[in-house]
Image (cartoon, rainbow over all chains, first blue to last red):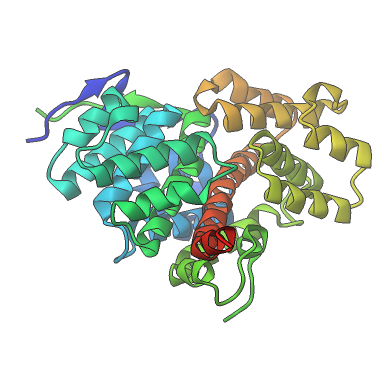
Length: 197
Length: 176
């Protein structure tokens, strides 16, 4: 059902991820570590990423709380648009793993993949509507130049219909992938997984 | 609930202002951000001194030209009685002038994550245990740099949102 999109090293195929240093062995994990894994993600106990980060359980607990509140909270910017921003940030930062995961999430939520194909091919021109184009452009700008945002850049978002609650959600979605991409890119690497036929 | 947290203060938000109220509608995000900061800069965290962590944060902000956050981390370092010359070297991003080998390794790793996040590889990561860091300290360091990358963008975005609310007033005063 899902169409395979591959461009410039990016893919919407499912990928695995392996850590480059020792992960926590579940059999020797503390009760706190187990609790944080269970709070973080349904598959955290079989994920190298979470099993590595849980070396610092309290830091992971708060990161997961921020991530889940940003990406899954009801209201505000649509979840599909949050996933679009995540995919753009991951494409710009060069995070093949995160781009794959969030391309798939966008497709599940939006029931289309046209803009994902554009983002993988050339993020700078991506967007199927003026609203999407504005979201993509702001995601690129805040990713590449995080230290300074001009109010006029937000005005461009208002002009395509985003209200301030949606603008905040967009800022959060972009910022949390500045965080996620840096971990995924520097603590391990993506792996091919056997594909379902 | 009008107490300002770290991000509010560094972004220059005023309690009750439109940008403040918008931000705090997402209270779970604000709370988890503040608690992340507290966990990452917990003085009791072993294997990676608080002074090292604050220098890494200052370096990340200086590389990102994040002015208000740089001031924030400089103030925290000054409160720890950090040697002024070291503070100055890091604030100027003069990595070559930093004498201490372990700190240089931490800052080198920071430089890659901040400026070229996709340029890192396994060899770059393995330099950290070689410099004496335990695996939990490596996790703390990577989370810290990644968190500051998030914090920089959040603060810049909120500053712009706050300024956007003031724009009509700005425009009318310009026309006087």
